[in-house]
Length: 178
Image 1: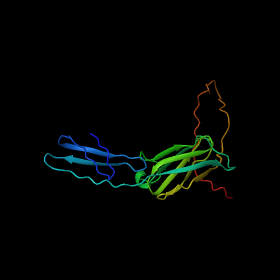
Image 2: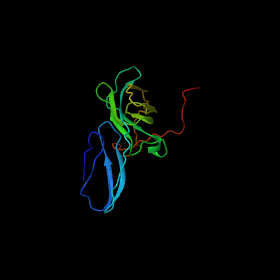
Image 3: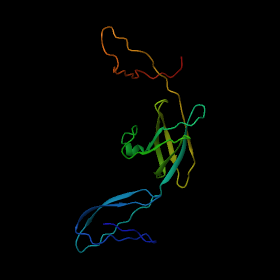
């Protein structure tokens, strides 16, 4: 069952049998809306859909020298959507930086977001993003070089060292100050 609204915003989804339906409303440039509606015989249902504009966020991912970073994964999510506020949720918005480091995250409603940028050669960037209605100010994210631990596995006996897993985990945060 489907309908398209007319110029005054009204629409009618007709020929439905009694029951409960998930109603989803989608339009380009607007935040998707969903609501559950129960249709009963002999009754008319009215549903008012709040129209919330959604905005794209354009950005650029660069390294410390200002060089564009290709294929950085960018995610943005509200703290409410994440539940705990620290990790992206299934409601996160995603983008990947292209050849010149450019990315676009679409359909963000005005508000505050956590943003995370990941790339294998750089430290993870975490920050905040504020989206204002009607604004499309570009965002520049500067990634910091990551450090590496290099070495070799030297067996003390006849052991195959081709597929040894090496894991490094932080035991404390080093602030870089002495």
